[in-house]
Image (cartoon, rainbow, N blue to C red; front, side, top):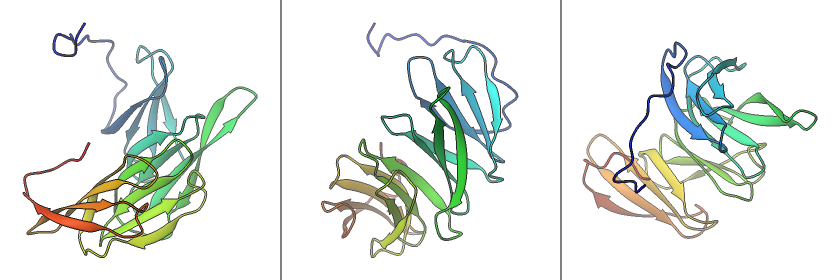
Length: 193
């Protein structure tokens, strides 16, 4: 079946989600959905049944990504990052809450396969981690814009959408975010995928 001819199928009513932000399919059967007030929804049967996980974070959870080994990160509001700790005896995950270092708006989360992570923020700032989110370092793009979307295609090359009230820029780095160049683009671009 091609994507053009794919059919959507209603699986089951979701739990009473107050608000959902991001869906992440971890494996053939395991799905996570981020929500508000520190709530995470989890299914191990591809959405037929859901459990509600209340994390210790009391903020809206915006984005979620996992590394290849099952360790993951959740980006929340106000500089909040949650990272998994996997208990190997039963492969169960719990989420450790930490702050990225500042109470700042966070917009986008990008990770790579070897454990690096980048989080975009306001005021042209990007935070990065070299150790799966254990510690974070702030770098500035040099542009005083909100970095609303951020994607790294490999360890060095990344793209970001930077916005202020009058202009939208496409930012590019070829050195892991140490320096950025820009190109003005239409304000109609909302997402970088």
